Amino acid sequence: MNGFFKLVSTFQTQAEPAYCGLTTLVVVLNALSVDPGRRWKGPWRWFDESMLDCCEPLENVKKNGITFSKVSCLAQCAGASVQAFRANESSLDLFRSFVETCASSEDHHLVVSYDRQILKQTGTGHFSPVGGYHRHKDMALILDVARFKYPPHWVPLSLLWEALNSVDEATGKSRGFMMTTKRAKPTCFLFTLSCKDQRWRAMCKYLLEEVPYLLKSRGFTTVEEVVYTVFGSLPADVAPFVKWIVEVKPAVNGPIEKVDRDETERLLYKSKVLQQLRQTRAFVLITKWMEQNSVNSPEDESLQTAILQACCQGAAAFRGSNCYSNVKCFKKDVKESNVTSNGARGEAVVMSSRVLVDGCEQVIDALVPKRPLSGNVGRGSVLQQDGIDQVTLEEDAFHPTTRDLLAVLLLALPPSTWEQIPDLRIHAEISRIVSRKELPHELQLEVEHLFEQAFFVSRSCTEEALTEEALIETKN
Image (cartoon, rainbow, N blue to C red; front, side):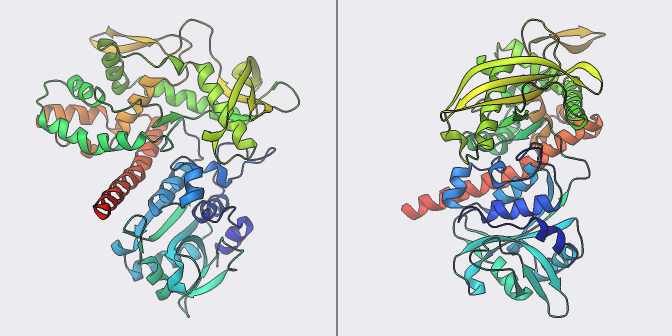
């Protein structure tokens, strides 16, 4: 019962009938003290269901619930480390060992996905955390997040395993269990993958299925040709799939004059990651490809546009809206001011957006690193120095642009992507360029985070494709 008191202190009832997966994650993430990277209400940083939307739009979850793979993806996206197992790929003995490990720990918690009917309960698929284990009776304590239906209850482990080892009709796949832990490093990432835009499926299919075929079917003489082939045929803009994270908060008591130490550290950390990314060979290759093929960044890539979008999303979240896509947001004005941080003037910039969301006016502050004043944002050119390509950027190109998103995506692709390249020399060179072992520590953590997200996204993508095929066969 070691983990019970952590879980019960954050235990809550699901806000919607289909929110069991989201609420279970909220309970576990808060029990692990994972930092959501933004404020919930007032000064408190606390997970709420409305924050868990990076892998599936909330309106879809509210209507249809959420699958096992998407819950795994959400936990990873939110900043936890996850080990997920489907029951048909596991065993009762392995499950028992994870139950006992998590019940004996304050920093490991187990989430189970099971069929209620096997437990003689009403309903079908459900998620809940496991709050304890009785070794002598071989029973697990289910902290049921649908508290309006069932209080916490003990279940024979063999019966719970039977409920896990059932097929989810929505996906045709087995349910399962996942162990969640807090990352060794506090959550502070510059980039994240997003599945909210429907175009992510086309992007996922292209990267997983079509890219290996392209690399296998063509002869390459340079790594530049490899990169150009991969990114020259992207099915959609990369921005809806790979996003950069902006920290926003409601403006209170007038303009901000000072940011606290934690906020400053996060800003400096993100700036360092971006600087490290732009010193990689991957970034140089992407920049050359964009220049030589006249690939222009989207017109709406400006900092002001990005900040407005972030402030509108923040305003919707602070109002408690579960569906940002249905919220109408209008810009009224944007003001910019330097603020003091760590005793120095002008270390950060606060961009305050006055927005009108569904008729309610709000002022939202977005925190960004200080930028020198100059011309275009995010523009650069490739120059040669000592025979090595280097990218020179405008001084104010401090916020991520398309070339940054493409570069970090290139680094985060699984190593197996390049195995189909027939030329061993080209294969070895591209493998060196994208090797995470050679990256600076902060950038390495960033890329590994995206790689782990991509793993869960790819599983979800494959699962949905199989589900669609099954539906087509059923209709036929």
